[in-house]
Image (cartoon, rainbow over all chains, first blue to last red; front, side, top):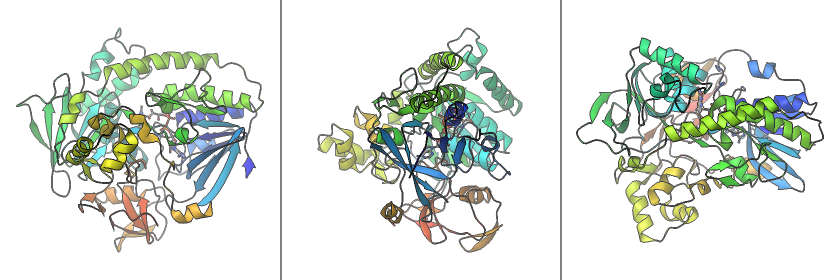
Length: 442
Length: 85
Ligand SMILES: Cc1cc2nc3c(=O)[nH]c(=O)nc-3n(C[C@H](O)[C@H](O)[C@H](O)COP(=O)(O)OP(=O)(O)OC[C@H]3O[C@@H](n4cnc5c(N)ncnc54)[C@H](O)[C@@H]3O)c2cc1C
Ligand code: FES
């Protein structure tokens, strides 16, 4: 085992900024990322192209471990041991590597939240992030005729990327009020947000391609036998209850849905960081409740790539300081974080998930995709036994016990069942499933 | 490079994922669920949901959205999820 200076987990905007900042103070850094190329979600690079423009620009003090998945974080006296498997994804030939560090930066990002509706488990229903990742990373459109539905400004870059790879975006359905409202209103709650210019550009792409944008609309059902052939789009009231008589059938071969993001929490949970309202709690130096563990990016709150990078820079410097480097306070990044968090809060307030979604699904709608637990079965299990905590909810209903370990269904199941502590679904023994043969090797 | 998908030869490029190759060919589903035998393909696209499981060179339960293709890979659809293995 080698003792590294700073170890950074995650190579998105936050992790890359942390690695650069720590290396800039002369500290040796290992940057561990699951992907073949750096960039994370926002800066996802096109896979088939040669090279990795971010890896090539890293300072020499940074060792980049690509195709490297952290599957466990183990607290040891005064430090943490980070267990990594490196190699072809999910292959038993991966090799293990253990990094021990006194300064660990977690920057594992987030993934889309998807809400269940009848037919959401049909092939052809994707998360918005999947459509985005496939378009950016593989140059592939998830379908020829696509509806993009959900809430928040993220729907716009997804629609633009789909158009760029040749899909026809039939419409964008925003369940809340229109994004364009505040983009056009300079004094609005999100005024000055650095993303405004970017969004205006996406809106331009959509206007040029005649993509209709409908607020207070949602895909409430998908139809087809083997894959999606059409969807039902309905108008929603303020609470997201479909307005009677408003349902329309739209022919599509793909749907991309995104209702905000859920942080990728496993490594932080493994390191025993305190979690508040579903996010890792951090202080002004991005320090978590655990000494020597820092968190940055969407793990600490959903606020976009610029905020993630600013937090990453601060976390990297704080981590470097912990291992003895002399650092200047990052005043500019700290100001960026303050304004970024204000906009993030405004964003969250403007694009909430409203309770009406619970009525989109039927009794026979699968809510846990892995274990194929239906809403009816879940609610009956809850009724039959007194389920007060997530653990008993999982055991009683089977929801959240599948391979994804509740990442996809956790928040939805907890809300449907009326269980408070949805974040408890992130308490997973193993951050990323590995094979028994690999576990035996460790 | 050449790979095979359910025995059929397919042209692929380095840097493509298994899911990228399959969806690029118009294949939408490549797995059935253990319980109801329902078809599944890609869902989250970033390695989180485990819907996209596929068999690669005899090894089941490989996430197609994350796995990069390699010369000569034998990709096969799979029934259910076969972990632990
Ligand atoms: C699929 C998807 C697509 C998105 N596309 C856009 C977009 O186009 N535009 C936009 O404005 N916003 C986009 N977002 C929002 C995005 O979350 C943020 O803008 C930004 O990328 C967050 O930065 P981050 O550094 O916090 O995390 P991320 O960029 O998510 O980076 C996290 C990194 O950590 C790695 N990782 C996670 N767990 C482990 C582990 N256990 N071991 C090793 N590595 C690990 C991941 O592979 C990833 O590279 C997208 C989000 C998702 C989920
Ligand atoms: S599509 Fe979710 S893990 Fe591959």
